[in-house]
Image 1 (cartoon, one colour):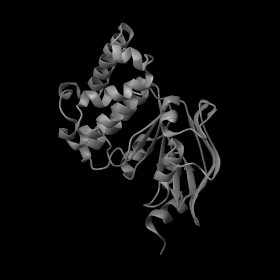
Image 2 (cartoon, helix red, strand yellow):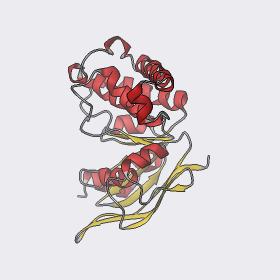
Image 3 (cartoon, helix red, strand yellow):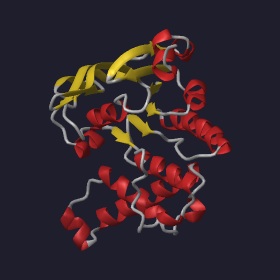
Length: 255
């Protein structure tokens, strides 16, 4: 097992008297592929929001590549190397496909505001590099031919892929995917599984995903953590998790 790139230890979150997540722990190795599953309302998205800085934990520690993320706002966590997509797609719908990716690339620019205003040589060089990088990403996702179209005009599955491309444009160490297969047809889900494997191999990122489609999770992830009512009820390989009595009870109930 490689050294952990993303680690959560004893992370809890309460909203008033409601304990939404209780003592959640995770160790995601470099280039790991880990699933986070559970019934509706289990706390999965709350965990993502805790990892990415939307929420601040009531207790616990979160680190990326050995550096604590506590106290960092979402944009600072993105700069540290933690990127995400959303269950409800959040593209810049009025902008072009290319501009959606270009905006994310600007996280890694080094020219100053003055250089941009005056269009100095360093600014122009970086902008040309950003366009090249953006087009390379769109090629990976078979979207280069639609670069000039408004993002809102893409089919649903292409919008999902564009959101992943935009996240990768920030050059993350770890990529969090929130229900990437939601709304996809069976063939699109097969293509998505292949794409996620390709992303891991090509970009060398660790991937943590929330997904309701068990076929996607069981055929894709190396390890799985199962939440129910904010508590971890199982963790391990897909084979171990799908035969765990607590997991079966959480999804199917008892007689």
